[in-house]
Image (cartoon, rainbow, N blue to C red; front, side, top):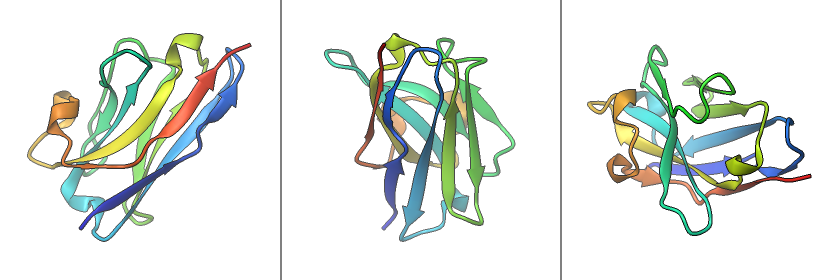
Length: 126
């Protein structure tokens, strides 16, 4: 069974950067589209960015385009989210999720996540 573990969250000032990692075990990520999702207090979980199983296709929410970059290393069985120019509204718990690869990055929606990590907190504040 695929298991996902996020890391890299923390407290950062506005304008700062963080890099989140999602490490997989129990199965290879080659078969999965991987997404980063976030949930802020009192809000629904939303898609941030997704990447195809090959890494050749990506999708970003409008709110993070130009600031966040998703990438994956199938040899290391990991997916990353580089977050730059962070804003207070980026504060949330960030989750990675795996979706079977017939779902492409354009279907970056929480209801399509088949396997989930436990989340990592990102707090952007001065």
